[in-house]
Length: 64
Image (tube, rainbow, N blue to C red):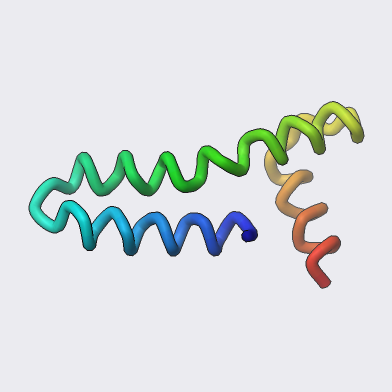
């Protein structure tokens, strides 16, 4: 899954599970995006580019 897919899916799940607890819904959303941190770390170590913007650009180029 890609970053925007994780973000959207985890936000929907968070709101569905915790409709009256926005903090918990936010934590579910953050947890869903945190799985992408290992991909970012691998990109940064391989390329030497520690910029999150650079990682997003690389991901977009790779996806097309």
